[in-house]
Length: 258
Image (cartoon, rainbow, N blue to C red; front, side, top):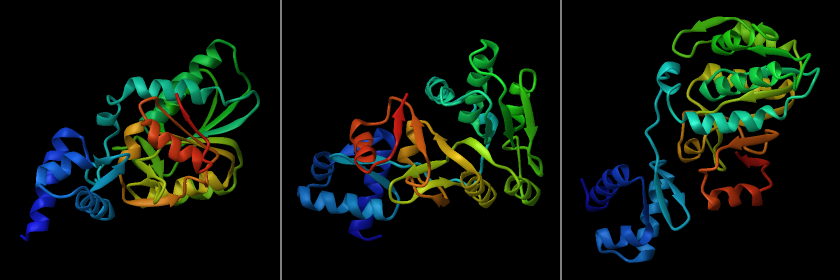
């Protein structure tokens, strides 16, 4: 292993423990100039091993091709609840809405159920491919499950039959989760089935809203299915860095930090 690659490995090991590093810290760690440290950061970002932030870099978890709804359902609950409460205010009476699967959208389903019980909204029709959303909303409103191939690890349905049904429908608004997103690659998922499904949802909806907690902005995933400009809005939590929020706003992206 050459000197440069050894330096990268050491840097990544330290970054994983600390979470983020400034350019000055990197320069001091390796005894190099600030311009050299910036070049190291730029190269690591190009290799998708870190994410550049204002004045430094942030750790990016490795791409994974596995998913567990049960495991993820216990993470970032406070952030997901804040996102859900904010997003739920977008739903109006007499709308047809689609809720995609995922743990953040599950919190949205719970917030929606609470609004319906309070009488704040009525006469909505919900479509979903998620078993979790179905269980939450069936007792209190009309729910249509869009079925197909069942994925136990995701507690949802996907595949040809799902896609065929979506092509025949039209929604006022859809709410979609994401595995990762950034301004360069766009909105990403870790499997082809989800990519095809979400592309169709965006196409068949008047409005498309991405619900994603702030840590997803610092990750990469396998496949990008649209740019951040292709959706109507992004709702995240208040932990998104002010610098990153400003970047999105200056690019004309409709983004809300709940």
